[in-house]
Amino acid sequence: MTATEQAALSLGTEAARKLSTTTKTQPQMQGRTPRWLSGMLPWVDVDAGTYRVNRRLTYASGNGRISFTNTGDTVHVIPRELTELPLLRGFDDDSALGALADRFVQRHYEPGQLLSVAGEPATEVVLVAHGKVDKIRSGEYGEDTVTDTLAGGAFFGSQVLATAQSTWDSTYRAVTPCIVLTLDRAALHEVTRQFDELRAHVAAEYASPTPATNKRGEADIALASGHSGEVVLPGTFVDYELAPREYELNVAQTVLRVHSRVADLYNQPMNQTEQQLRLTIEALKERQEHELLNNRDFGLLHNADLQQRVHTRTGPPTPEDLDELLSRRRKSRFFLAHPRTIAAFGRECTKRGIYPQTTEVRGQAVQAWRGVPILPSDKIPISGKGTTSILCMRTGEDDHGVVGLRQSGIAEEHEPGISVRFTGINDQAVLSYLVSAYFSAAVLVPDALGVLENVEITR
Image (cartoon, rainbow, N blue to C red; front, side):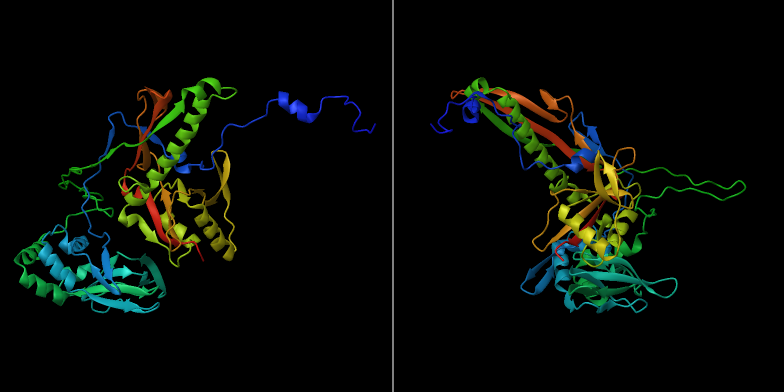
């Protein structure tokens, strides 16, 4: 008899497994992310389902963005978009706007070419349809200083249309191949002679005084300081917006179905219904994070003020670009960027011999710049051309920042802002649960949120 044929002295492992239970985990999901934005936003309870943001009266500057269409290589400005120009703000005659749009002349510039030179006569407004343009001014010691970078949709020279004579206050130089559309003062006057309504509108704009505002565009509050004696003090009041923005809570919902046989018989050692709910709620929270960034109504990428959108100087995210983004607001709480963008920023720092420090947020070590943490979010989209955005924000009602909105105390609440309602059993013995998440986000004042746009991460 061989050794293998001898009687076993103890129970074998194969037999033992038949009587043992496995050590198992809860069901895992690959789609779960850190959801830094949801975790970092202060959440405000909205009892009435609507959140109104009251602000001081702000006079629109008209310095928005202009959209274009193209047919092959020919670019056209959308006529209605011309009302972004300060002179045409509030004008609504489509015929006159169409005639003005037809008078724009298309030009092409190569990198390094000058679109205008400071001090020379300014005779036209320039719309940047494609590419990037540096705004350059002479520094204190005679050196050229880039004070701004314009990209597609921006414009300059709008004051040319409103004044008889003017000169360029800055030099504008193409950084990349650019397509621009120009309209000179003579063409404007020719069109105004053809349309009485346009001529009256332009005349009224020339005649009406510009309202006194502070540097943020808010209606000025008259004050007196540095005086002596019994001078007459100015009277004033603080005006409010007549139509403040109201945010209604958005909803993300699904119906979870669990067969009663599964809930009854396969409920140990883990409750099947609880695990199904847990995974479903995780998916809802992922959708909530996505909507907080990308929803066209309240998403932060779409609600950043146009004056708080800046462009990279050279394409990749550099320390200089993040400094520019930080300088636009006080008490910046955090940056939010795609993980690939954070990696691209790290490469730019390495090129310069800079090694950003780390900081601890919610018990985790994350990369930081100037002491402000850079948090990852894969919900920030990356375009097909390899460009994306970086957000920087101040948060909280007390600091007039960005806040999340939700309603607590709703019926059958599972956790704040999320409810789970049992809706019955059908004829197939399937239990149904309605799972709902109510949420939104609000930017209390424009400078609470800034976006660095057209960030290249593929170099």
